[in-house]
Image (tube, rainbow, N blue to C red):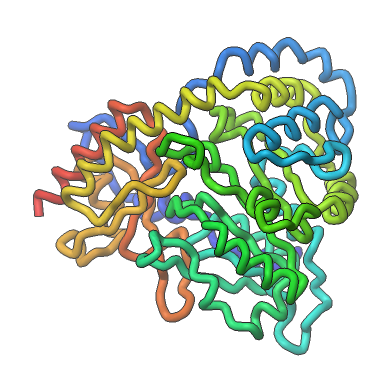
Length: 407
């Protein structure tokens, strides 16, 4: 067996399942889950229709690079969303969801034979983080170094905590903006700092932007800044060493379709396409047709965003009355501090007792982070995914408030 597999840690939801294995939720309440970030809004009918209309394509092998029509639809969306003109043939590649691509990219760009006298190559990622970053790095033969979130900066990653000696060994940097679980969006000056570091040390930046279309403000500057957009604003029009990854899962409520795309540096994209050709990850023809329909329509995205905005408007004040929590920059998570009076601020205790007494599931924040720089930056917080309907989310918030007020 691959010895690197022994370095992988249990996934957060496996740990949550083990934590609550002996819990019998209070039957007086219907179960409400805020634990898993799985969109629950209905899939738009026109996307499902496009999928079924294209089932004849099941008789054909798909190309790894995808149909030209799909790459063009993705390029058109980038142009509308960010004002950027990309070459669909060389700067865009369809992927089976951003999760698969985030993992595969590390296998493409990491050279495990480098820096062996210093402990090997490094992958830097935020902390807390999406666990695929860690697994991808470890299985590529790299060491993971974490940049803890900073509560004073709305839980944005503190890249300044990484020393020059680490940046010198870094081959890949994972950036998540809007962040999971904190919802923090990186400003332009932070992108400029990371680009400067990338230029100096030669590492690739992977910008995970799967939550980019869920935000709460309105107006011309309301949408979160993207990595490609930041690069263009800074005159980096070749997108050197930058790959942005996005997905339809959250934007269009189709997590089961496993559809997204990556875009950026044409040189990197060429190598990534080569890897994926052998990896066997071509997108099915019917999924491609449904994806074209989804990327070509914005009305359903606006409606989807409005539903999330309403939930946060209703839920955040309820929880803020009893917890340390505030509206995030974007995304569909609340990153809430556990009051000291609840199990001495333990996120595990809070999640377990809340499920037992009020039948509401949340995810302990410590499960989404690793101890680094002397602390686990997720400890004492819980992640709440506002993916259920408005009424369910409000009911869950009211139960959480009652639970905390009982102490």
